[in-house]
Image (tube, rainbow, N blue to C red; front, side, top):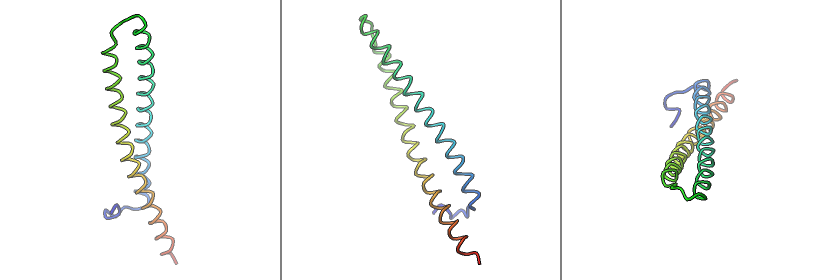
Length: 101
């Protein structure tokens, strides 16, 4: 299905490189969200000790958590595409190798 567009091995490598770069950026975003949630959780604990309202921070944590889940879903889709590209590249490489005299 992927090679219906007639992609060459070099084109596949280029697309894989782009997707890998996006994957790296998504992982960095998830890590930043995780750190921010940890920091906010610590602030909430301290505010609760002094009896302050933490509802706005809890809402922000939930929003960050939702954003992290959304990015994780995108990451799974991207991983599936990368896997397909790897398989296609392997298939094309094998086909080209066996087709050579």
